[in-house]
Length: 176
Image 1 (cartoon, helix red, strand yellow):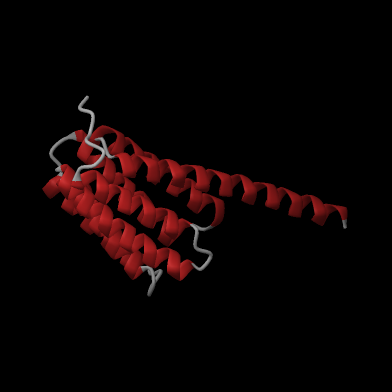
Image 2 (cartoon, rainbow, N blue to C red):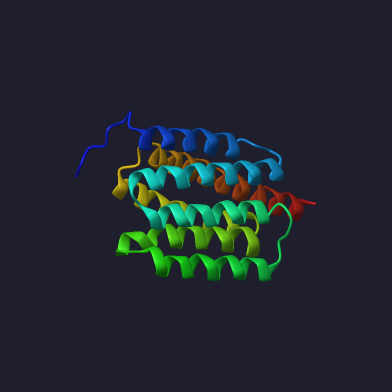
């Protein structure tokens, strides 16, 4: 495995995506979260172009469009259109099995945002994070790997907190 130059333009753009991703996931406002995820995904696309992964760059651009569209609609038709475009572009850009990881990640994220809520949404997003993490480890993306680890930790912690809150609510509801 090649050890990446941590100060290359590709890696620096990945650090920028990492910073935007952290900023996005610290937002309490869903609209700001979605807007910042769009910016983060666009910067991810630049990062992946510089790393030479066109399939990951295209999947990131699809994620950018999805994030922006989700500011205006939660339409299942829009979600299906995004999925069709994502997989179609995958067939055009993917050159190896590894190239399908970002396509799967972007597709899982689309399903999560448009068809799920609460813990199920976060579990599907955790799967998406797993695909991105594997992709980034294979590509040698330092910032991308750190970002996905942060997202996995934050998302996993949120799932545990939501689960505990639901158990407390059920328990308190029975005690009344």
